[in-house]
Image (cartoon, rainbow, N blue to C red):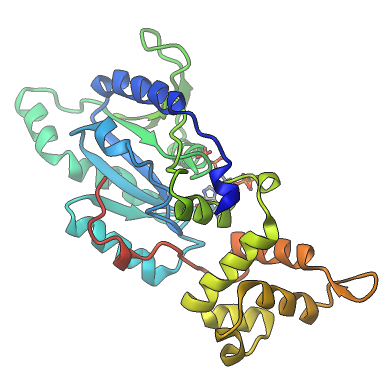
Length: 295
Ligand code: G4P
């Protein structure tokens, strides 16, 4: 997409974050990689695997309240097939949060046994939370700390500004140092992140974006799309995105002076309704298209 390409992401941004994360790796036992359950592939920073190197990791599919439950299941088994521990949760209702600490302990079970053998029973487990902006890192940390009535502290001796959070007896979280940018140089990734609202709308052509989203929904989720906007599935199947947008505008009575359809307003409505899941619980990165997923 043309407008996606115009977003400039300087490699310097990532270099700085890479350095910060690398310098903290020695302080932690595992990494929790937060992904957006609607776009588990597109919301993953492509350099993450090399940055966290061989640290034990666990994938957390957040916002699963807005994702297609059948797809979330497929993603979870896909990660597990690839030997990556994965859980799904949502920070809106708190569903699934209880599984986090046990899942991390499971990933670290061999190490925990080794610590215990050395007499280090009850050693604090430290986990770094990483994820691209807007994936829900703060919400996750807030939820986990609240759930366990724990306190936030700034530890002396650790780089200033690093936030550690105690989320349970012997369990600490460290917020991502730096900003982990997504892979914006891949236009389809940029586009999907724009659908979910991770790219500021001011820099996007909303009609174009909404038209592309409608074409995607036409092909992958025709029923929720047609039910929501009272469209005819057969008719829609041969329509272009902009034509679908016009039809939605017409059906919703979105007109501007002269009787013209207010496609701008229709576009905003479609994007909003997709982003807040009014259109349904929809996942736009399909597990079957990313069988060799690695993190
Ligand atoms: P970040 O630290 O990774 O940048 O993300 P943050 O926690 O700020 O979350 C970004 C947005 O996503 C917030 O919405 C937050 O409420 C929402 N969010 C986080 N987790 C979930 C989830 O599991 N389900 C749903 N539905 N939403 C989630 P916002 O609109 O920016 O703010 P607000 O609505 O909280 O005011």
